[in-house]
Length: 484
Image (cartoon, rainbow, N blue to C red; front, side):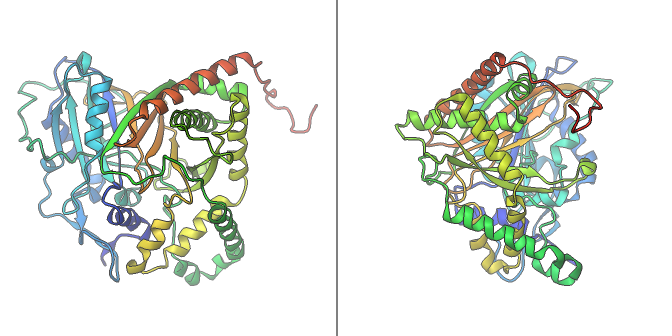
């Protein structure tokens, strides 16, 4: 039986097909220390390691049976008879002096090109020439693949909990694999973006309910939740904004870094969660951006699409996505920092405790019933500007040191895709005590530095505000909930 894409997977192909400027690859850049032996890492060693470990992910050797969606059935995954690791892995040397600015500029070109649908939908680049002997792995994977492999993706296979015992012996590391022509610049992917309502591993079609009558017990609740969400998010639509205009196929990319300990100190003093601090920081940056453009921040706030983990506490190690989305108001019109933080925190809290997550899941289930020939129009509606202005995703990463090819991984720069008419997106990842904001924008956002400086400034201001607040007293361990 053919291994066909689900309606959920195919949505990300449809979004590309509806707008040539929309790229639905997810991606990231991992930055590593200088190798222990002081030499540039070998492309052959990277490719060999990938080939050894790709057996765990057979999807990465498969291609689509048809390059386009539509018709009466979805494309299927099939073995690529031409698969060769060197068609997916290549090497580039960063321009001097090899600092952060040069890597960000390279990443802009890297993220601006689509993957070839006639081949397995992933690519990877070994980037050398970073200052101080550092190097990077940059990659991208089409989002239609991610649901099939759960929370594991190709670059995760390269990471180890301990450095290797030995460095690579002998040979010229720069010439051990044939390199593609420079213009063949579609690069490689690994980062698992947690998308909006569509990131649901178990988004079954309504037929699943019909075949399992016991599932009808909660049908009324789901219908009510879906209705409430449609009324709230369709009638009270997201405001018009200069960040929602037609996009080009070219991207800008910047990274903001913060210490996770400082973020946690803010949330301990001001209340809330790390995600609340992230939302408040991005809100501050967006406020600065709108004011820089002479645009009055909308009184009701911008609306962010924010993924929410639905996985049970005992299933944190399970693979796949158990994610839905919330459409969170960002109080960009609030001038006072403390009030802005409180408003952002309250808005997220209200939505998480309500029925919106269930409503999102129910709408997805209904849309999945549409045949491929009609599905694209419904799927595009879930990414329309009337629903949200900007995507902000925050993924907790490993708080331990990881290694690849014997080198310590220092940084992780995540990417979130831009849907049509959304010129800005923010992906956040924590790793080994640090937080990284990957900010992607359309090429025409020539004032992106205002947003970047605004996010960094909001984090500094929140830190200062938190330092002026007394520490919140913790309840002693073992104290009963109702005890004095």
